[in-house]
Image (cartoon, rainbow, N blue to C red):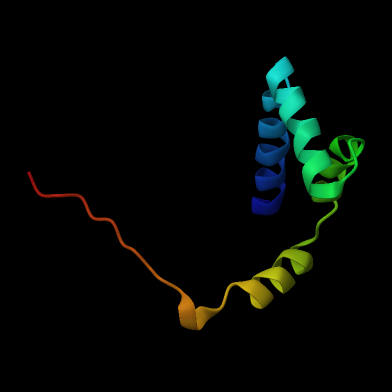
Length: 79
């Protein structure tokens, strides 16, 4: 359920950004600079939606190393 919610939020955010001409131009520019392919703008969201929980876990294990983790706890000041 959490994965589906996260995917929905990402998709909705990306589509909202593309509602303006500037947003569309930004998405195409990003596709060109990162993937050297303007048409990637049409495939990127679908590829993201196809990710499984195992895909995400594999990347987390590879790039997010526990030994270098920093945990910050915010507390509310007493009034």
